[in-house]
Length: 351
Length: 288
Image (cartoon, rainbow over all chains, first blue to last red; front, top):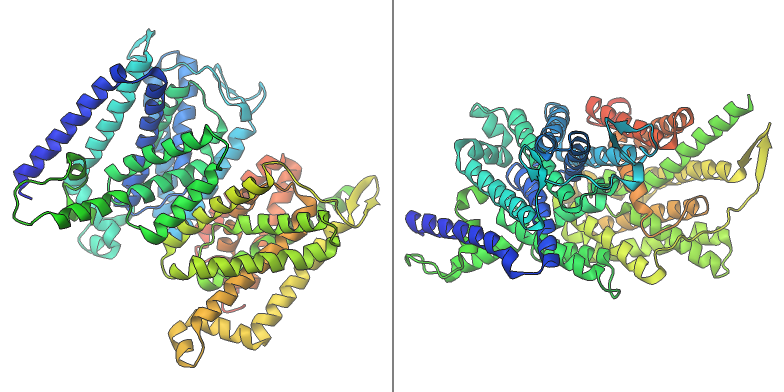
């Protein structure tokens, strides 16, 4: 596909996404809008792991550690300041700092993949256990009571920046959440197109060669991990804004597993795939929760096993390959929907 | 004085149950390098097999020592044939598939038996030291840990199967050249690991609350012990189980059980950072 066609298709895709985000509240019911807001917040979380796993080659079993830290940081700060502006910034800064400490420990210690999984898993469990045991009046930060297993109810939701009296309506919350999702997506896409992004992919492909070319793989991986942690923290703030509530289950292993399932289903090494996987899987889970026939673990487990065995590349890369194969090489225009072209602007980086 | 005896018994209990929980995983991970994230669910299946057969009238000892390992061993065999054998050498895929498997098993058991807690009375009585009570079952668990260690050592060190299995793990191509079928060795090793795990689940059934999601509490602990122990199955697992088991119980004694777990997880992370090859990579090189 010629370069200008690809660019035009990408621009059209982005424009379409913006229009869709803008008009959705006037088309659908409030309940469905709230559900979509939740999916968008979760999709930001999916992007954070999609970035560090698919492009940085770091498989973290504990991405919920940063998600939960972000959620708690937002909740504690929002209760104390009664203003969401500094709280959102803290929800990004605290997980990023935690990721920096953990990343320094892991990557500069040159700990291998398997151990990385075990360490991130145990860190998540430590956080879950610690926060779980913070019930009682003794555990409070400023004015915020941590509440142990019961969590923190009635957390102030987002307000207009620097104006705590104007709280966002559900429609404005949707625009914010979906806008953040689009912004994070575009930011990561841009980063991956820049030389810095190429270095991240190069380190994933071959650490020794990257270091022979003068890059420090430990530092690159550590920075990738920190960026992933910051995005997950932001997702945590969006999640707490959606429910006005946070509890230790935000750190749970089953949520960690779900993120990995979204990415496996949607397609590792793409950014669009995990978003699609997240929405599809979350929709299925919500649907199963509303009826008594099947257990959600049963379905999730089955889906994961089937995808690993039969469709290990995931939905988006498989569909992309199919479209590319059906399309004659010299034809200037693609028949595929712009959705797929947005997933494949940089096949070299996605390989 | 009596309190120290009780604390020592608690430590012994912590070490022996951790060792039993990890032995099956050490066989599967240590020998085959398959990260079985469904390990906790194998334990859960062993516990369910024990409880259900005991409540159906089978003698509790038969249910624990024969039914549980047999059932989970067969389940392991089926899983290896249907799933794991496609994933040798694909580390990440094997993690993902076994994680999916763990969710699948939880879902199946929840669908059949519901989300309620099952239980079986603890056999053997209690005895008292000073004003404190303890149970003979604690001593029985320690005995079983020692017996299992002896059996696995005997099988791996002195039988033809053990020799062939260790050779296949070191160099499958060479073993195949010498007339061994590696696929069959992998299959039986996986089934053996599953059976040992099922036995652990059966032995712990009387002293733990049995729910479909109980495996999640064990899987992280078991992994951290096996990774902390390193490549040697017995010496590594035993040393790591001793370290983490005592840290857990002593930490829990001085703070709360929750912080006991936090302390043991932190110890594990520091240990992995200091000894990336595990305890046995440093101190018991080349041992079994």
